Image (cartoon, rainbow, N blue to C red):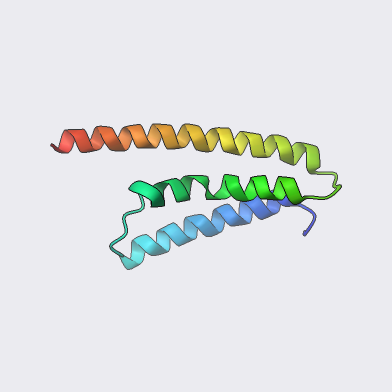
Length: 95
């Protein structure tokens, strides 16, 4: 299990989703979809994945995990752009 970075990224994603649901449940004053917290939510998993790619030793998963990391980074950037656009569009309709 410790040699499989895919499992680590999947578990981090699950923890992030559960943390967002918990913060929504306790109804804190922090809104997840605004500002720095939104960028943190979008880019936490890709940053961890990049660090895992850099520090992974010789492993049979190294090449495939590198491609997986590139895929995650691209999806995160596209998701951030699309969700930021939709949030700005929603704010413009409120005015």
